[in-house]
Length: 253
Image 1 (cartoon, rainbow, N blue to C red):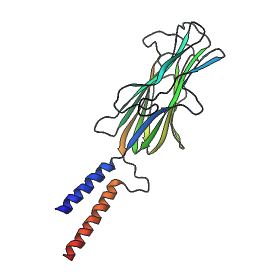
Image 2 (image 1 turned 135 degrees about the horizontal axis):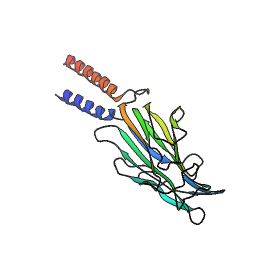
Image 3 (image 1 turned 180 degrees about the vertical axis):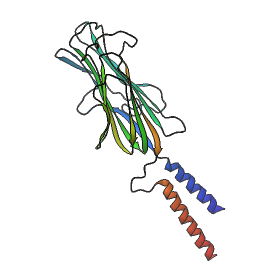
Image 4 (image 1 turned 60 degrees about the vertical axis):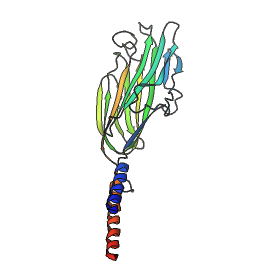
């Protein structure tokens, strides 16, 4: 009876450790950048925006914690009557009872008091860095920019590996997907308003120019590609060892 209880305890403990697939997500500045936003009027360029600490790390959306502001709304005056704004907020959803993860990002890049064309530009850029442990399917859902002339490009790539998906035009909705394993991945985005005809109007159903860039990870399996055996394999070998020891003990009795 003691042996049975011991085996059950071993299986239970190792079964819990077998569920080791995890994903972390941090919004970071791009290499060489001091902040995630800039605004320009003619040759004059001004920087603004900060990626903030939300309590669990810089730019980290809490699991199932609602929407948090990762780039606080900031604005700079351009020519005395017009201002440029950037902002970004996000939420993370980990559906209960699964190992799936959804990251929802909304970026903002817009002007106020701009009704005519001119040499105006506002840019909001940064990247997600994901640390992935496990095998997942992934899907990117990129919303069409809400201003007709705005652009929101992106690139999803593995650090030290290939580019998995990209949109170098950024003027329409786009959906990309695939599969990935353990590693470090980055999802870069650049949301620009003002470089293209039709970008400068602040009107319509979405006057703040928000655009969504969401990514979803669907769990497939633990990653057993390393040299360390899977916890389930350890459980099997552990139980075999216990059984062998019990058999020897019984023979001696």
